[in-house]
Image (tube, rainbow, N blue to C red; front, side, top):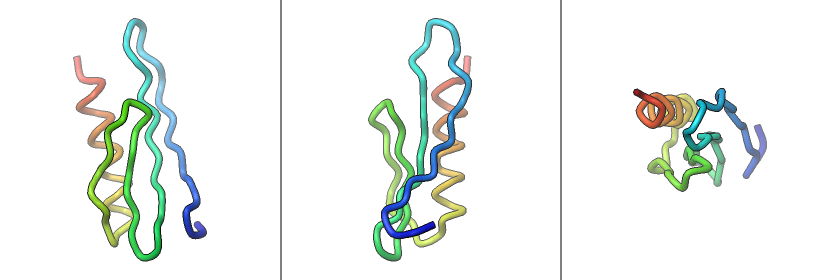
Length: 64
């Protein structure tokens, strides 16, 4: 992944709920996750941790 590259993790749309599309963006040595709903994670040095932040957000946001 290059500087400021996007990695998008699309998830299935649930009927009647807003779609949560998460992505991981890199800025310099840091990566952070953000979502189409406006949520964003703290900056992380670990890309894996940023991806886990995105997965955790999606799980919480779509929990019934």
